[in-house]
Image (tube, rainbow, N blue to C red; front, top):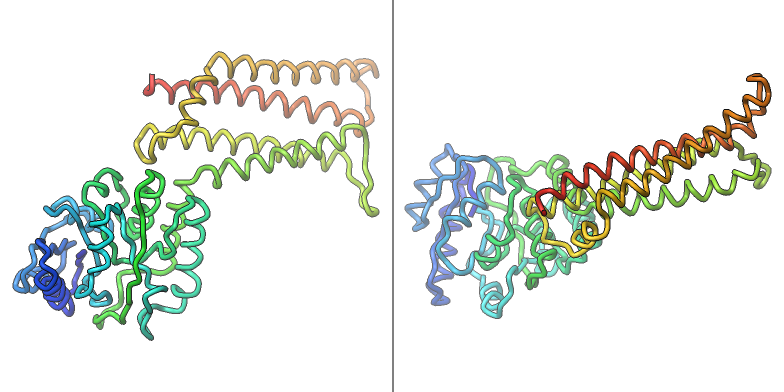
Length: 374
């Protein structure tokens, strides 16, 4: 149980959990991971029969990480020490863990939420939206990403290499269990109004953003790759459509000005795709996400030399178009030219030169990232 100034409820939670252990015949202990309480929570927890572990680094995730590290059991069940969860009825969690599941999530929406137990903002917006995003980005089976009552194999939690220290720890555990192909299940869980008279530590918008930020950072495919490919494809299509000449659709004229914006979309799309590759490579190498065969294939076929050759061809093509435009300008005696015709050469020339140079730099950077692998 993570704990920060829970003097009003921590003793009752510990007694309830110890009662479950005695009733069910489970050999276990109750650990309170104290995060610097100043209201005497530590002494109350110890008197109730808990083992108190002091965790200096502040944060919900930090407290849980310290508690998991100190635990001696094969299985760990974690839950808030605010009396909002029922520690007397953990049979379903133990049953699923004994059946071989790595992570067993409580589902408050399936088990029941008592009146006043969850703010409307969390119940109808925050939790459903963030859970839906997590399920979409990671194909996770979990329908309540942020339930604070969950059980897991201690060895599995350690294998996840959990790193976040704040409230987003809850999302990190679900995401990593899913990415690592662990067995994940859910059991119905009831949620009651907490027993505190002070405000909760959770800050809706701040912590909601931290969860969303974490989900996006762990999914470069949807943060960078998919938007980048769409921008690149749309921009390239519009440029190809306008190269022959101006177009009119439903009375609206499209000319080189539109082509200029389309070239910006191509450039931004290419950068976004490269960011996806960089992020994925770094995340795999640093152990933030499990190894990915696609990264192995990338370094097998996309070498520094390959990148330099392809980028060089693009760069030379851009330079050729630039020379062509200068030659046309010289043919007029370096005087005024038809902007519409000239820009149809100059814009693709500038774009290809920038893409080629960017490709050269990206090839070297990818090679640097690949040094650790080799």
